[in-house]
Image (tube, rainbow, N blue to C red; front, side, top):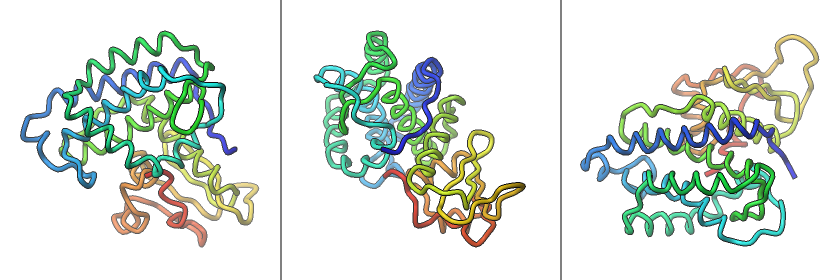
Length: 255
């Protein structure tokens, strides 16, 4: 099965907690009016979006309570499988919001779960057993994507933990390389990632003929389906050179 590069486990643990804490602090500063306003995600207000972040943190408690036989899934499987779980995730999110879920409390409980698990120990999850450190990587990607959703919903910059942003960008870039293997296009997301993808002529020296470059937030939005390729190009958010430097047909990577 396709794989993404595995970041250092100690960095993953530190980054996920710091990114979650950034969510706690951000949510605590939201007014009642802001929480009641529509988010950029169709059908959700900002309160529900914050509740969904709490759901992703709460998932450590949920999945750790279930039996698991071994490692069956990779981060790539989770990324590509997210659209199939949308309805179920929406239902659980709304249930937690109705119950008055508190993000800070969920973070405290998640840290207790983290203390019980070794990095390579399997944990149950929606798409099969997964290494615990890989599962935390999936939580980082979620936390970064939804931090950006909050930023665009509220109109106030989200203070991403730098290492969390770096991990999310690299994982999504690796997922592109895994989904569309090849060497004809170089995807650059400075300062965090550069990968080759898309089948075609391979470049052997110097600057490749087809280069796509963009900022981290643009890449997050494209990969997560928050921004279309055509919109990004029209708004000047993507630098694309070469006849094959068009990634529209391969995006988004998750939904």
